[in-house]
Length: 479
Image (tube, rainbow, N blue to C red; front, side, top):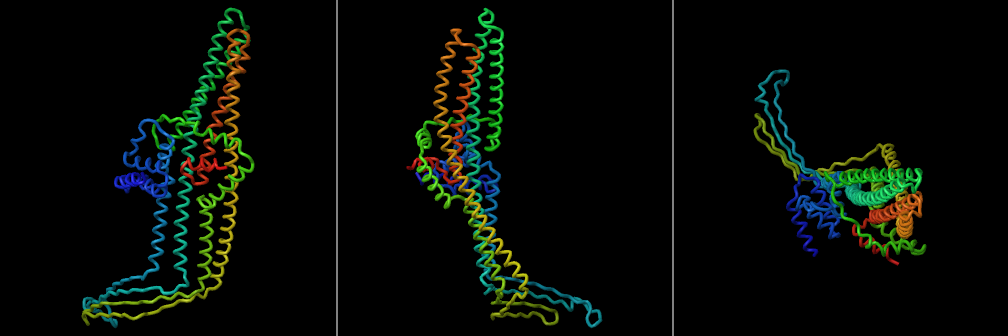
């Protein structure tokens, strides 16, 4: 199976256009995230088919791929990585021998205050030299290391943005499904209110209820209709936001989430003990220390500040360079052709003496180093707090799913009981309206808790840089 994905990647590479930033970006992330077979296959299919694979319904995985390809921030990071790699090459080239060539041409029209024929004074020549810097206190090697750190830092920034885009795609996708479910619940509630109103109209005509109960049924129907209209508006807005994120022009039919596959995880997290929660937080934290790109970027910034301090300390070192080969060719009207060449070594050295300037640079580098160390500590604290908050959210949402589901079961039975009594004229319009309100509230609470739980999983995946959801679920299920 691995060879199949590799063949798909090669097919994608053969078809991509080097002028298309999105395709270049996709290939970059294929190389960076090829460990996820499903995502790799979707990425390859997107390039090969030009997006036609998403013609019918849109799944969550497909929405993620489209969000990645439509992200301008990721395209920009792709360019920054290539630019940083070029900076690395420039630093390497500066350590190689310097090759220079010069050309000169002179013609005089005045000599010893007498005018002469310029042609008679024609003189031209060319020189070629190879110079190698042989000692600079190690500054070039440190600069090369700094360039490599800069490239790695940009890669980590791109990786962080990659998971931010995935998180945004998940949230937008879940928001559309949540809005659709809320609209469906509002439609059901409106149908109940309309049924109640129709029965109230019949009873009012026959004198079985007073005008106050009839007005209450009418107001309830108008209120439910307004809620339905608001739900339609929210669904339309969420669809627009999703389409903007993934780059679609029109609404797409989304695949529904199978919540049954999360049932075991929800039960586990809802009943997790304090000791288990602490152990889970510890496992995630150890993984974040090694994998989280934001923390890695802070560590790289600290390393770069340390390297800059090393360069500032080496400013006191002399710089020595040598010309290992030079040659020249001259021609003049008076002397004809002549050439010069040298295979010896010409050594030049320079020693800085503006110590006050270098000392100032050294102090600034020390301050920058200490500031970067504080930034790393701050990044650790912020990330640890973010992880703790995400885990607490997952626990709370799992508990909310179970409690909301039980509440919905009770309110449904209560509503059926009141509805039956209302048909038998044993319950009032107010009783039915109250039961209906409890029912719609319970439905909406279950909808919010379910999709809130999925969003908390997406947040944990982004923090832990876990692209495979099955791996995330496996980590959360560990005892």
